[in-house]
Each structure stands twice: as structure tokens, then as C-alpha cells.
Length: 369
Ligand code: THG
Image (cartoon, rainbow, N blue to C red; front, side, top):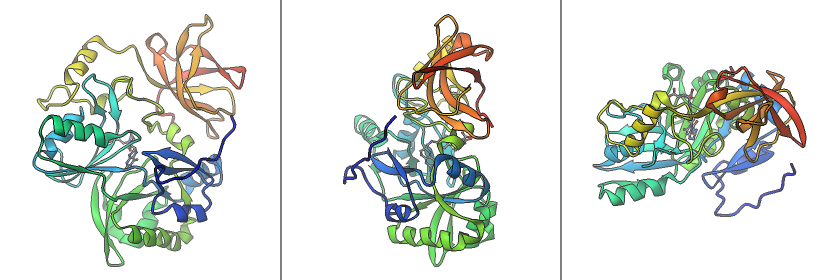
């Protein structure tokens, strides 16, 4: 696969940190929520090894916030997700599938509850704001919906506690997973959550002031020198090994949340009202015929820009690989695939074509690690 440069424009938005990541050696971008999201620095594998050992600072401003405030904000947020938020608490983050009226997935944001009437949906790559505005208009909800100027810096990796406590104080170590709080640094307050799109541990700083964020970016490198801090980004290999799902890659608006293994975030028994509830009840009763699973392929390279079909020995389709990368840990290509029910037992070998050659692989459970 040949890669081409992509032309920046106002429509393909930069972030307040773009200049900085470019001076730190970003080498490729992807596009996410119409914004630049770095994809590699040194190389996918060398970024991966560094992330698993040290600490990285990520420009993940492309994880945009949809802010919903006002009297009916809780009702609207609940209408969009199958996760029961009736007992949700201020200061908590909730990973929550968004579902449409047909029971299909719309997005998988982290929902941050800032107040009883103020929510930030930290979205994956689809235009949730128009979905929210449409629902608010149709239901005549008293809400305000906007995309605030919030630009996340993630600090990820096993040494992230050491770096973050050096800036924000020792109490930051006590912050629990999927909780957020405001912490001080040099006279300014920052919204910090313990979360992030890696399983190496870390934090996300939701920066509301561009200049403060740019200064913070530089301080993270100054304070982090002793921890071998580097600029990084969500890493394809690490996130597949950890089975952190990606909307648009692993699942999209043609898949339902059961097929994407979101069972623990689907609450059909409670009496909350959300779109697609009847559909999901029906799907649960009938059962699903396919679901996301892992695959391991005996090869050392793969480029993914569309689904790749998996066949059994009789040329029946087993399923489709949706994301994949070579894993230096498994010394194989690993991937996330939508697998048809008869093949869930993990015994069958499949065949896959990569660069016009046939390779073999097997189905396995997620996560890999
Ligand atoms: N952080 C923030 N916003 C985001 C992401 C993020 N928006 C886009 C995208 N990532 C949303 N998707 C995910 C997917 C997985 C997780 C978070 C956001 C995640 N999952 C954990 C898991 O699956 O093990 C924990 C889920 C749980 O148990 O609640 O962290 O990364 N701000």
C-alpha cells in the first residue's frame, strides 16, 4: 500500500499542540472528528516499546467533547445510551455505547458527569453533536449543546504516575480509574481524569485554555526528562493487544452493541428510557450471529484500509478482519475481527489473502493480553 501526503486545511482541523508535536517528530497523522490525530512518531514498533516501558504525552485533542447542559440534559444523555446512568455520580467517567433507534451503534464515548445538569461526551470518530441536536429539537428538550474548546493531553505509560505527581502533587496518585478531579499546577486548575486509550496506565488532562495547555505540554517534557518522556499517540499495536475498540474500524453503525461485546454496558432491566431499547431487547431474545473476536495470523505485516475476508478450507466465510497489526510480543499479526457464530469455538484455521499471498491463522478471545 502506498501512502500519500494529506493537505491540511481549516476543515481538517489542527490542535493547539500541532506545532509542538511536529517539533517532537510526528511522522504520520490520521483524521479523527475532522481533526489531526498523530499516528506515529519514530515508528509504530518503537513507539509501542517506549509506551510499555516509560511515559508519553499524547495530543488527543481529536477526542472532542460534546457539551450538554441545561434542565433536560440528563434525559437527553440517557436517551442516547443503553448504559443506565440513573445512579451516575459527579466526578465519574462512564464508558457508554451510543445507540440509534434501530439498535445500531452511533459512537462509544466516555461520558463525564460534571454536574447534575452538565455533561461532556468525549467522543470517538462520528458526528455525535448533530445526533444530539436532532434529538433535542425533536423532543423540545431544554438543553444547550456545543463543542467547547477542550483539548485533551493524555499522559500514558507505566511512569505516568511519577511524572504527573511531580507536576500536580502526590495526591494525584490516589485518583481512581475513571474518576476525574481538578488539580493545580503553577496557579492554574486542570481537569484530570485517570483514563486513556492504552492499558499502560495514565491520565487525561482536559485542557480548557490553549495557552495553559501549550505551557503544560512543555512542562511535561521538562519535568519528564528523568523518566525518558517522549511525544506519543494512541498506538495501533498496543490498543489491539489490549482490545480497546475503535469506532469506524472495529465496529460502526451497521453493528449492534451485543456484536461489539458491550454486554456489560447494556442495561435492559432498568426503567430508564433510551433509543433502540425495544430493538436491543429483541436482539437479546433472538441472540446474535456474529461478534468481535481476536485473530492471530502467521505473518509479519499487514496494511488495513478495508475489511479482509477470512475463509475456511471449504471456502466458507468465517468472518472479516477489521483492524490488525504485527505484534512484536506475539511475533504474529494480531487483529480484531467480526466472526460468524459457527466459528466461535476457536478451533478452526482460516485462510486470508495479504498482498496477493495466502496466509493461515486462528480465532482467539479478546483481549490478547
Ligand atoms: N479518552 C477520552 N475520550 C475518548 C477516548 C479515550 N474518546 C474516543 C475514544 N477514546 C472512545 N473509545 C474508548 C474506548 C475504550 C475506552 C475508552 C474510550 C476504555 N475502555 C476500558 C476497557 O475497555 O477496558 C475501560 C472501560 C470500562 O471498564 O469502563 O478505556 O480514550 N477522553
